[in-house]
Image (cartoon, rainbow, N blue to C red):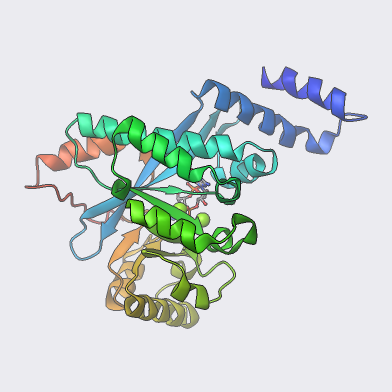
Length: 294
Ligand code: C2E
Ligand code: MG
Ligand code: MG
Ligand code: MG
């Protein structure tokens, strides 16, 4: 088990049991087990919506770890651990394969083929196996690159360890992938790279959305980013939209796309399927619509 494994390793590598680090290391060993067995890991999916009519335009795949003792562990907690302990390459490859495999299952079920966006860790860029893992997965599951979008944070895009990122992004886009900057506004905040990097989309971080419409600074920043993105020909997705007040502000400021609890929480594939089966009987064609629920 993970526990026994953890104790063995701490005995081998540590002079004494470091109580403070025990939970941390136990999680790392647990994660290694989860990767070996596969059944504790899941992807949940959160739909992205066009404000104008609520149509679903895509989905973000979000990694979930159902720990046998601790229950759901947040990716915000275990992804940094995976990165620090050499497990992120494997975890990232699992996400690529699982998302593509899910897309092929949805295709077999006759569900609409909507683009899925996955999050890419810095480690996947540094190690340079991202391109190989993507090509292999796409070929294995028969999915077009245009159906798999890649979300990278500003810090990933600007980290020099990833090498010259421009030709890599250009090559990924030439294959058909679309590229988004995730958590836009929270990173190094240099605007010059927006001019140089080949990008399709900005995901405006939830931190700027949270206090809309009342906070004048956030309102100014969001309006300015939307205007700038329009000028640069980039789509903007507002992240973490929870209220009608936020939605109304965003729409008036010219934002077209949103993701957030107001429309849908992330859910397992079966929940998404059930929503779609229900919606399919309601609407004609492939555009799925959902009204904000909150
Ligand atoms: P992210 O990529 O910015 O994902 C959006 C996060 O916001 C998700 O948290 C989502 O559940 C949450 N969210 C969406 N709408 C709302 C809302 O209306 N209100 C609030 N309060 N939260 C909302 P989650 O799933 O906990 O993921 C956290 C972060 O973990 C992600 O942020 C991403 O950076 C990372 N992550 C998740 N899955 C993966 C993955 O497969 N690979 C990598 N490298 N990172 C991942
Ligand atoms: Mg993301
Ligand atoms: Mg984000
Ligand atoms: Mg985030």
